[in-house]
Amino acid sequence: MTGAAVVEAAGLVVGPGVGPAVLEGIALRVHHGEIAAIIGPSGVGKTTLLRALIGAVPPGMSVLTGRLRVCGHDVLAASPERLRALRRERVGFVGQDPARRLNPRMRVRQLLGEMAVDAGPDGPRRLLSELSLPGTDELLRRRPGQLSGGQQRRVALARALARRPALLLLDEPSAGLDTALRAELAELLRSLARRHGVAIVMACHDRELVDRIADQVLPLGAPTMSRPVEQPLPERTERTEPGPPVLLGHGLSAWFGRHPEHPVLSDVDLRLAAGSASAVVGPSGAGKSTLGRVVVGLHASASGTLELDGVRLHPRAERRGREQRRRVQLVPQDPLGSLNPRRTVRASLTRPLVLHDRCPAEQRPGRVIELLAAVGLAEELADHYPDALSGGQRQRVAIARALGAEPDVLVCDEVTSALDPENAEAIMLLLARLRRERGLALIVISHDLRLVAAHTEQVLALQHGRALAAGPTTEVLAALDDAGGTALTDSHDPVGRAIRPAGLPPRASARKDG
Image (cartoon, rainbow, N blue to C red; front, side):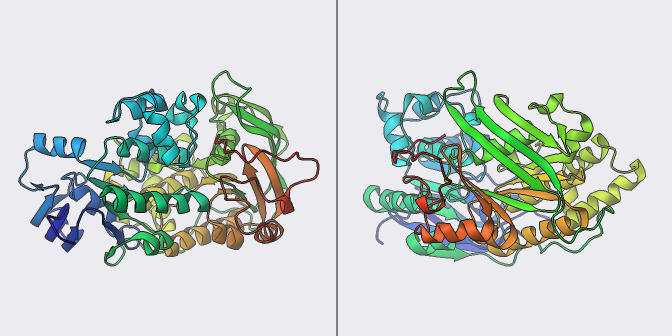
């Protein structure tokens, strides 16, 4: 490539000033129309490098030495005002937890309109269409909390593209997206780079996406996180195979606001045995996360019945008893949005111990360290705040916090999407051990069919909010394979006829996210 580089970094060292550097000797040069991928295990500093490029390293960190120019500006010498202008006018940034950057009170139309260079009324619709979202009035009226995780990520990307940036920074852009949408994302990023000259730098665990579109790859060093170590957990009756039903759901439906005529979940049944793991799969926007929120009582507009050990659960968590709330816990898809930014990791993990009276006060400090070790995190991270952690570390903290309540049912919403394959496998092995030792029942919401096949016994397939298939994992995934490998993940086509339950009418092929 010829001409001035959009990003030019040399000898970049980032760290706390005391102790070892997080990033050392980083060199990166990206021109217009190029895509650069930063790869490496969870916790090696990929997000820190992205933030360093725009002069926004995490609290407690600084660029200690090196040279850095972005869009013609010396980032290390620029004033705060110049840096803000650079970020506002020339750079688009989409982080790992995009929902955190979307104003929860604004509607999609407003979120896109306030950033758009194209001020016309059809601008938001065109942006949504580029990201494979329907530009309907119904979607444009939604607020971020009424979108699935995949939809939130695509709206955040549309918002970043609305300003027509020269540089686009993406942190795990394919997390939470199904196979078809990851393929469409690859084509979109390639088009932005080749046809529009946008320089793209992305931190990514998705090696298939990296191999498909990256012009250059920057690998970072050894991980700062380790595999979960075998630590003793509170005594529970050991189970070697799934036990009796612990959670039953019948006719579960959900909608947003006062509009039940536009359901995001329709008449779904659920059966979960003690010690078992059931996966919920389907394309982005199919209602998977909504089902998880209904189970834990966090979705305001819902109907149907839920029973925990034969006792009826109120649809709203605040109307359930404390013990019922303790027994059903959620690990959300966006841990940064769920962790209090003003609480240290230690405080966040201590809270469920106090709230649910899990151990005496004098034992709580030791229990916090056990929880950290159980999810493969070092003791020294206990005094860090969420902003100082990597995305994978935050996800592990969210899991540890849920485990602190010693639940009987754990809903895991895309808990491995921010982790590299090795650490994702380690987390699933940890959850498998908890199932064996404590009879923990899991609901695993995931797009990763490899992990689903290896670590779950039952699968519930959703599309357009409806249950299209349910049964043993091997049978459902085999039927998926017979249907061409895309039946549960292709956002444009209905779920394959090979696994359609009897009596369920075919659906139109037009896309209808919700």
